[in-house]
Image (tube, rainbow over all chains, first blue to last red; front, side, top):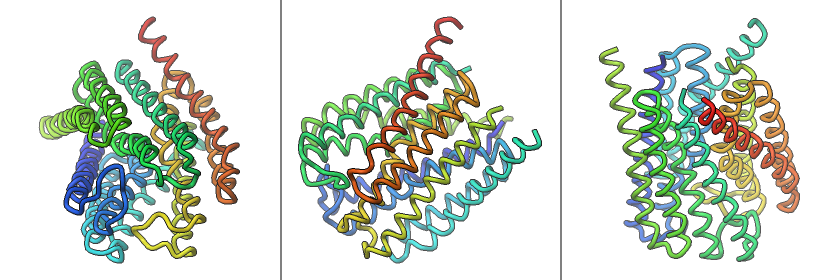
Length: 130
Length: 130
Length: 130
């Protein structure tokens, strides 16, 4: 069973859920009426935090689970925690200024890349040595 | 096996697929040429129906499956059906006016939250009592 | 085990990852500063290539895996490869002009639809004859 990876999955989704709440708050505070998603820079930064995380979730979640299944549950979960920390840094930094989103972005990109490349190598290994 | 959850997954994806078709139709009808996604309020509402559903799919699908695996296939499927109904209400309401998207949004948010919190509790229980 | 489907999953994510890199390059080259995602047609086409692929990933990946589990690992992987080829054609075509995105779009839409409808039929069969 993959309890640690399952837990990290839920924690990542809770952070992402919270980013969506911040978009709803920013919509109200800065007066950006639906269906618009532009028109106020503070709103747009909150929106892009959620959207960029959405863009990375289809990389992160499948790579996390393939890494867990083909390599190790707890190592996958550990790297997944690093991804969550990077995403939280990205959220906090980007809320201040677009220029401050770099560090968090780099941390999460590195974590996701390790999961994806690790899974790729492990799958190829199994296919060739299976 | 998780036949009920698998069926609800496919049904949710078919509804989402249909929302994409409506965006393509709205693009043609209201003359919004790709790559633009703004410029006509009717198009933008159709587009946001699809986009907001896309934003929630990475919460809904993993939470649905973790709930099914850790708790129950058919309860997960039942709550998943509620999510689909909420999403259909959201689509119909938002197509009329941005103000009419609230009820459907609330229904699907509640269903997704029950799946996510239920999965979290069940995973923690297993980790602590495993 | 589903080694072929796992490999195709990683390959699809690598192509999607590469589309994200092209958006970052286009952001720099055409001077579209974050959080903006509009203002230059060349940037917008690169951005829409990534976004449209993101829109289809929650259909493609679950349908791919349900097809693999309910029908066949290697047939799923083969259709998944067709999806990847269609997505690459879409990327190359759309980069040239919005009008040239049609063929690649059609190929990937057909591949995803075969996976989704195949999975639906196989799940219903199991539920009824299980």
